[in-house]
Image (cartoon, rainbow, N blue to C red; front, top):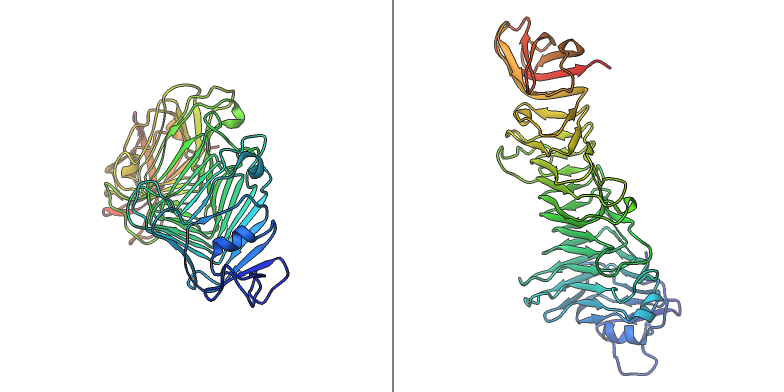
Length: 446
């Protein structure tokens, strides 16, 4: 991290007591007054050190490689705009192709313009087309980006950039939108929402290709978000999307290598210890997989994810898709919490469900070798207990059920499967003297 104690010759200083007109400006003892004047004067590779203060500016970044803008911290170094974008960069095709890196660090970017389409950060590299790439490395470190004032503007609107690597930063007010950004990686960040699109069949795209969008290391998204085109998207196990994730505008892709690939291994919706609303609530996942034009179908992975809302997966045409949901946890208590279309094969082996969430006949096939139904109610001994677990085999002797009450008696009790139904099994608890509630586990033999 750059500090104000450093002052090599490539540093350009900006401060509220500076001056944009005097000769030999930019030194620590003769700083610029505005960031824009410093940007205009800076050479490729220069770092602007911006002293504490509020700078009311509309920054236009020049096509110079290796620039960096570094403040003291997000509470003291603030760049704000009431009209127009706070930071904009629309490179020309030739010079933009020569820009390899940019860094913003320890800064707050505010924008309160209510006009439609005015963003806090607006960077559009679509003039630089493949095989060239504009900005293979933009590092956003410890920054706060806010958008207020209404309108349709975004906290960040990023188009056709090579790679954006974000860490320890917060984006509030409105969404972060990425269109044909080769890689967007966020570590320990928070977002109001996001809109990630990759579609190399429409418009420009960077020469680095499609490396994907990644939320990692306890990143958090507070609102509803969208995936479209042919994205690679990964939500790692430590990260959370509080709102709804919709991927219903995925498009047919050119080749197998361009197929959408969505991995949701984190938490969708409520955090641990929060009781979700049975019928509605955050964490809904809706994915409509596209028809493939290449050899490989698109990929959706739900394995080890935690889902507090309904999960709906469908596909209109094309090859059958296997959706890997192994060891996932589905908390929703309403019926039809998990649904799949006719071309979807769900692999939910080792997953955990509520009883009601499984009370639905899935259109696609399903494969489960171990299922846990939490908080199942079992009547006294001899009373049939019907549960909807459509295992692929109809041979009831292949399955071993076990019921473990959560209250007295707290020991596991034997359960016998007595019949197979169209949607599941009928079981009878053995040795249960009174009605009990507990976890019901059914295991299929290997």
